[in-house]
Image (cartoon, rainbow, N blue to C red; front, side):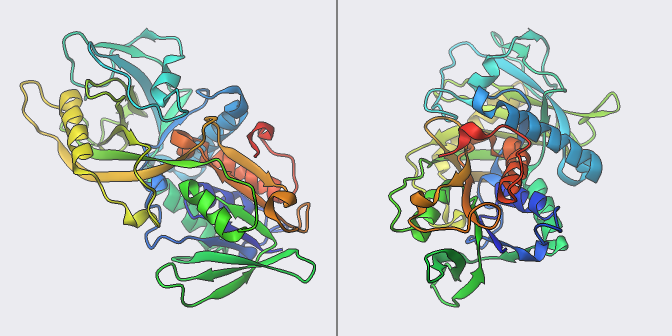
Amino acid sequence: MATVIVGAGIIGASTAYYLSQSPSSTPPSSIHIIESSPELFASASGYAAGFLARDWFSPPVATLGALSFDLHKQLAEENNGWEKWGYSRSTGTSLENRGGKRGVDWLLEGSSRAEAAGEHEFVDGVGPAWLTRRVGGKIEVISEDDSTAQVDPLRLSKFLLSTCLARGVHLHQPSKPTSIITSKNGTLTSIRLASPQDGSETTTIPCTRLVITAGAWTPRVFQTLFPTSKLKIPISSLAGHSLLIRSPRWKSGDDRLDGKAGCHAVFTTDDKGYSPEVFSRVGGEIYIAGLNDAALPLPEVATDRKIDVKSVDVLKGTAKRLLGKDGGEDDLEVLREGLCFRPVTRKGVPIVGRVKDEGLGLETKGGSDGGVWIAAGHGPWGISLSLGTGKCVAEMVEGRKTSADVGGLGL
């Protein structure tokens, strides 16, 4: 049984990671990961915030959220995650500013991660030292260290993928899936790949179990591979700009509090009409985002993205207001400007499940011998839900009971 995972982002890497842990049922050498981008983790897996939450989810996602949060902690404890990918406890805070307005909603068309944070009960708190205090601002702690955490998603994604490759998993990159091949009786048997640049160098690899984890590109991949299917994958893309900043008030070493690593997440508002989110990371970095645009078209591959200067300037202005030195002096260092495309669904919950054969327009072997699965549409929670999603998809592919209840997340 050959398993092909289309999409080498953090969801695909997590799926391969847990699937390759079962060599007796799924030999790592039988797992193939396909990635069309010439740069790995060039979208949300490398440019997202990396904020983790255990209990900030709606009922359909609640058990998956808790499972994934626990797996993040376990993985970090077993592999020195604090040093390798900046795993840290985090304290969530809400900063209320006078005159602020709610921004573009982006978790579900009607809510945001900041609004999810607002559903928690507040307790008194003072917030992080790197946050600039302004007259009229009110800071409240909305989560403690047992329910939220922080990672560097790029380093975590690299760890997952490198571990898979060390086990014997194959990576085809850059390579684009162009079509599927069936047996004489119409059963899925293999997949054809080509160079994403010019379509040359066609390769065919065995495939009886297909998992699509292509993020915002998932609908395009599905339509390409199953052109006769009438099934529409209800995932759209939401572009989001970000900045990675260094501040003199958050230095490497400040992330250890009372002998423990400790970071902060700040959810607030801005008079520019959006809801900024600011996250400190281990190593002295601060990530700021929240400025999103559903109208920005999805590029052919992630590396074709074009950063909007005006959007970056808005974020820089917000960074100066929230993180800058009193008196107006700009002493912040911009380490990176980013743009990624998050896969979102109108229901606000991801799609994690098997596609029925009638939705494919062909047959699969069925059971654990074959099938097609989709795991995408995680919105702003892709990093947080990554490990739990990967574990559950691996269990579904092998025909085992899932560790979380994902029954309400299918198509």
